Image 1: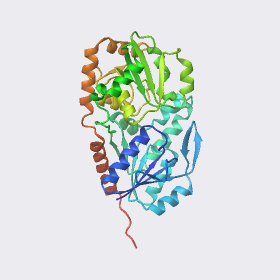
Image 2: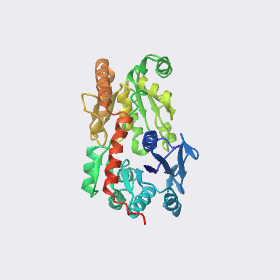
Image 3: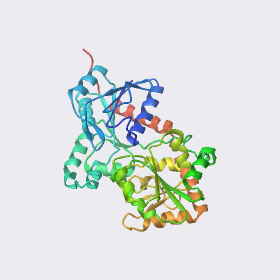
Image 4: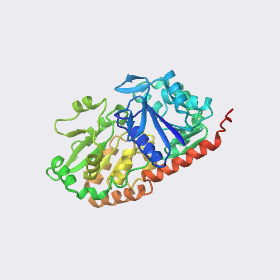
Amino acid sequence: MKLVIVSESFLPQLNGVTNSVIRVARHQRDLGHDVSIVAPTRPGPEFEGIPVHVVPSIPLVKFAVGIPSLALTNLLDRIGPDIMHVASPFALGAQALAYAQRNSIASVAVYQTDIAGYLHRYGMAVAKPMVDRFVVNTHNAATVTLAPTPIARDTLTELGVKNLAVWGRGVDLEGFHPNNRFADDAVAFRQKHAPNGERLIGYVGRLAAEKQVDRFRELVGIPNTRIVLIGDGPERARLRSLFPTNSVTFLGSLSGRELQIAYAAMDVFVHFGTEETFGQTIQEAQAAGVSVVAPRSGGPIHLIDSGVDGILFDVGVPESPRIAVQHLIDDAELRSRMGEAGRRRVLGKSWEAVNDELTHHYDVARARVKRPALA
């Protein structure tokens, strides 16, 4: 099978879309398929032996945004894909899906970004009806659209998107593991960032307005705690100016072993964003055995059974996040119990298992599209 993955985001940009594309590309390559990646950015002409093709883009809020062009059409003509995987389609993805539909090529569109929610966050809610129409038209050009949760699937159904299925995200169960907490480098991490035995409250993700990282100000001053924020993004400078001196440690982007030990060293993982379609970093924290606090909104509702493997706070109650975090900080046994339950929750969600599900969706899409016979 010749698979082309068209992504609105790729390395060196680090985010959930990029991570998912990497995992999918590796898995399909290892199954013996011919895989290519098309994106606005790339680290080089290849990624781990997988060709990466860069297409025209424009800068927008420190991101390279792919734009429709004849270059993509010509590239796809040369590759001749059997199936198209389109990650978080926007302008570039919309062109790819239209190309696939026009040429009777099976396509799978992966819904990963709540564009309308982001517009509201950035003060452009007036554009929501237009964006909703764009989302419907774009995804209805796909043979199959994969929503990350049943909640997201139902939302897309209400908008008018057809041919929907649910496909979640995998998590590295070996890399993110509770045993990392006892490793020497994790102990050193805690000694550095909680030198007096404080409890570590942590976050991993982009520093962007939609993530609502500024709300960590609500957690400043909880006795015997330190806050570490891991990630980078357009809000980093502004966020640094918001917090009292020495109240928060910004660690920048971490990956690999450094990220694994950072998770394991945390006592409570907190996510404030209310517009998440999924919440991959929540799964990573759960895999690491860390108790989680997140909003009762969007993707976290599907990832957390509140009171069992984490706590969902009420978005309409301002003091709710601090109360939830304080509750966990005060109760070591509860933190441990919820961390263990979170780990159990994700045990069936290895990237291998999740990507095997994706291969099934590819098969379904290909079965639905009848390719014209060669002359």
